[in-house]
Length: 247
Image (cartoon, rainbow, N blue to C red; front, side, top):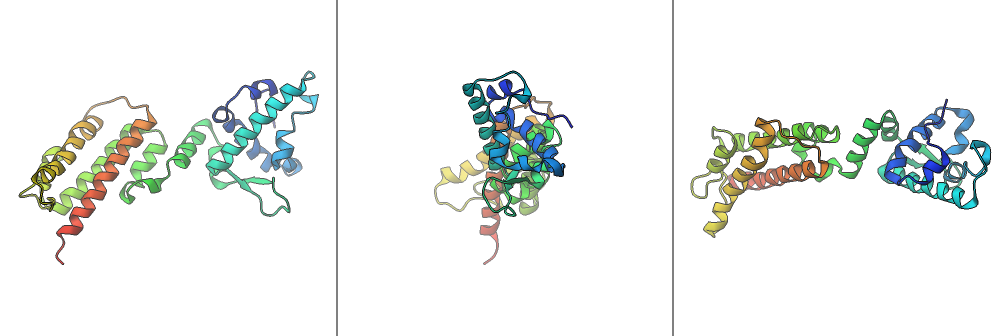
């Protein structure tokens, strides 16, 4: 089977983020071929372009640049959890392609989903957002992820407060500084007023556009920030729910 790797001189010019997918696809092919598994060793693999069987004679500097690029990308794959040390071997340097790695090797899109999941693990979010919202995020459906996250917040607040309504209107009523079932207990009135403003503002500024209009969102950082905001709201809601329970 033909290697998915670019030519040696092209490899030398690629950054780890650009090269890692090619290496993972190559390693997945190697792992499936018992005759070629010696290349699952980092030294064997990264030095495999030293011979000139792949093309014209290359300078020592060119070979070293290729080795370094391969090693950098290999290290990134280990950091992402797509490859891991093979403890069946007696010495360090041997690796295997992990279950996540095998999934990520299937396509460029699968690799990107796996990379996002590895760099932003679900544990960074409130547990209520680790299902549909997180799945949409790592699949690149950012608008869907944000809309789902705020839907979860809305359902929790509605159920806990026992109040009707949707969106910002529900938030203002549920956290109202004097009458809200989930109101703050702090003595400072300004802080008590800030809580419903926080929830209502988040729904008016973030949730409503994502739910009611086709808002372009192709920035993963922006999507993550908005999911983290929804996560914060859920944690605050949990605190207010716990505080209102009878002792």
